Image (cartoon, rainbow, N blue to C red):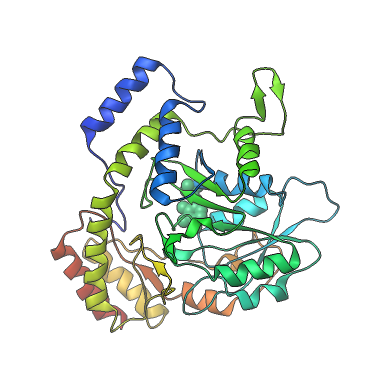
Length: 365
Ligand SMILES: *Cc1c(COP(=O)(O)O)cnc(C)c1O
């Protein structure tokens, strides 16, 4: 069976050495030395400041909303945030979970990111934030979104779960927005088994979040904030440190797969239009099939060959009951019905790639 993605397992001996250290120190969680080391290493690797490690990418979003006052404020009418319908469910469900109404605005049919032109018409007196997604690692139109946010006094929280290591105009894409979040789930490009991070624009927001993820405790007997438990532990950080050491290998292997697919498929199937100022991280390989029937046939044909492709992202989030406002999102719904992510991971061999290409071309064009 060829899975759509495979969690990357780093060198076992190195991981064992980190775990030996955890046993010697008997310090398992609560901002331990490995969490501190991974924080420093990630800030350096990504080229960002004010990075906070958390237990997972969904909590990263929730904490960012709280810290920035998007959620958790007393109000008679529910707050709203404008977000994209073409994403993983956590982007919208995390808002709803925080008591913020997700209001969808349609995507650009080519880049698949939130179209800035659709944001302003969705703004109401209750709107507090814009929550765009750098979908499949493709940079949103950050300047245009920033301008709208400034004009209407809104916060911007980028769901950067796919954007690990992506650069935009030569700098980390995660520097844009009041905050950008990452997911380090096992299936993501870089992982800590489960985990995530928030990159804050401002140091004071980082400090507030640091208290918030540890019950609001600023000392053993001092509670300053309403908090929750969203801490990363030492075992997660150990995995992260080992994977980070091997990121060059991971990236190189994925690039080879992406280049192979692009050469065979991109002339025949529609692919995502990449932001020209943005450098890919090779996290996903989505292709668009000509219609729903072609998509279902291709999925079935791949399955018969022992190959798993995934319908990322289906269904379009505006069609789910989490959205209390009924809306039609033409581009997102159309794309959701036609898009398939092909297997991409370090260790996918060339024979398998060729087989995947053959089946996809036969069923999908
Ligand atoms: C994976 C993912 C998340 C959730 O992250 P977890 O670490 O699994 O909680 C959120 N948003 C997007 C776009 C994702 O792909």
